[in-house]
Image (cartoon, rainbow, N blue to C red; front, side):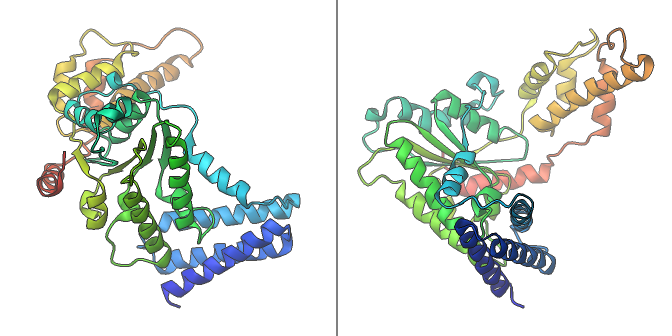
Amino acid sequence: MALQHLEDLARRYALKAVEADRKGDRKIAIKYYDRAAELLIKIVKLYPELPLRDTYLETSRSYKRRAEELKKHSLSVAIGEGHDQYFIEELMLVEKPNVKWEDVVDLEHAKEEIKKAIVYPAKRPELFPLGWPRGILLFGPPGCGKTYLASAVATEIDAVFFNIDAASIMSKWLGEAEKNVAKLFRKGREIASKGKPVIIFIDEIDSLFGIYASEIGGEVRVRNQFLKEMDGLQDKGKKLLLFVIGATNKPWNLDNAFIRRFQKRIYIPPPDYEARAELFKLYTRKLKLDPNVNIEELAIMTEGYSSSDIEDICREAQDKVVEEFFKETGGAYGEPRAVTMEDFIEIIRRRRPSISKSMIRSYEEWTEKFGAI
């Protein structure tokens, strides 16, 4: 059975399930939730290389959970507009990310570019009669601060922050993914029209808007809807403080149509020597360190390591000391010893860097071709 036909059939089952659920017809809703879930699993088994494989699996699990709820509790709660509102609210972070500019180690160039693109317009929009960039793409190796940087921006301008991934966009309710995109942007415009800055952050944006050999109907419709919404950000007379920040480790997978919608494209490189030294200071500030720990030497030893690699090294060094403490004393008394330079060296020898030189070359080549700052 063709992929497109399977997806269309799964969508029809899902829509029938949702309609029955809204009406309180539990028996029919359970039947079609189960059928839709089974078809999605079948699609994944037949086409294991699908870009949104994990999304379909999660959607299938969502249908199964809803069916089980209906079976166990005889639930017949309407999921129409209430579900729509829940979908939007679960994407909106009520508590702002507690990340400030000073928490972002290094990345001074990227911070300056984001200030020009977002922070300054948000604080003094009247100084930008020609408008400002609405789409900002952050690209670079994994674990080098893209998400952290976006969080810091939201804190800096006191913005409402929508945190998006492929699974949430493609929706728990198959066939409504493009509607969810429209709802998301509509909610963003509604908030921004009241003068409140809004950031829609889409992590791993290539998983939604990349170039793939095979695409199915749902993905195409989401892409088209997103393009339409991005075009709609170009104001048409309204200077809304609504920004879309996309983050990706694989910018070369992005479709050219989407690349053009992100007027600012900023490379987030791996940390250099000075940045690695600062990261070690940051992540060890709460640890009990032996005097023989040499931060500068650790920074030299970790060339090619990402920010998250360095955080993991510090955590593993502390875990090693704590494990040793519990084995020796049972944890009932005393305190663990200090973390030594030897502990760090042992962890670094075991843990290879996540960023290779060839990977860096790929990013630099893409920057030369598409970078826009």
